[in-house]
Every structure is written in structure tokens, then in C-alpha cells.
Length: 167
View 1 (cartoon, one colour):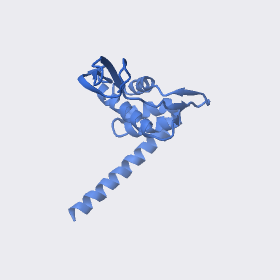
View 2: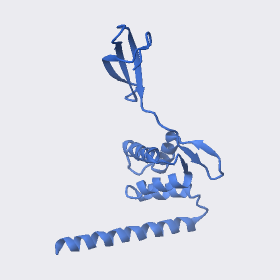
View 3: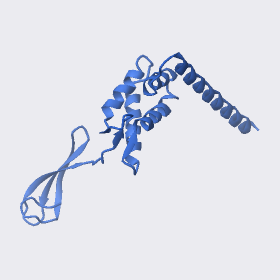
View 4: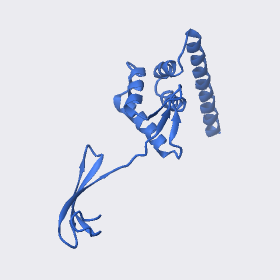
């Protein structure tokens, strides 16, 4: 780290502490040449992810907007706020790990549905109804049928695994 007084590049850390609720680290340093003391902050740098909306507009990914939508879909389902935060954390980490910095709202919606399906069928259907813009009862019935099919496929896989384990 470069000294703010003499621009020498070597310094020693005197003290480190977490700040901003763990989002950054404050370090008190001392220059090894001039003994000047200075403070630095380290923050994790996120490259912004751009979300492509259905009408082709682009905006930066907003985790609080996604969390609000998930909270709304999960009202009275028994899912804890920590669980919902965890879903958003996982999704944000997946988006940050991608090499492509643009994602469509459709991709985000499908990722949310993948997370909600095993946790709460009610939350899954609620989120799907808004995200997929259900127009009527037929859309709900189709989604419930697909959900039921995947549940029975999962049960078949589980029973096959149990049978092979018993043998």
C-alpha cells in the first residue's frame, strides 16, 4: 500500500477492524520509510450485473427489489426472513460468478423458482403467477400440473434409489 505522505510502497498494518457491518475492513498503517500513519479501507468490489427487462430496458441488478418480490410471494408460508435472504444471497452469488454481465428477468425468475420449489409450493405458485404474468385460472392449473409432475418424478427417483440401496 502506497504511503499517502511520501508515496513509499511498503507499510505495516498496525490495526485492522471490520466496518460497515462486515462489508469492509479498516486498516491503520505505518509507512516503513517515513513512519507516517494513515488509514485504508478494503471493500469487496462487485462488477455490476445488468438486468434486461421484458421491454428491452436495461437496469442494474437490485437485490432489494428481488428480495421484496420474494418476500411478497412468501407471505404467510412459514419461510423465515433468513431463508429468503439466503435465497437472494445465493442468486446474487450465481450472477456475480457468471462471465456474462447481463441477465434477463426470465433467467432470474427461473432461478428464483428453482430455489422456491423445494421450500414452499405456495410461494412457488405465487411467485410464478407474478413473474410469468398469469392471465387466468388456466395458467394456475398448468403450473400446478407441472409442479405435480415434477413431484411425482422426484418420488419415482427416490423410490428407485431406495430399492437399489435395499438390494
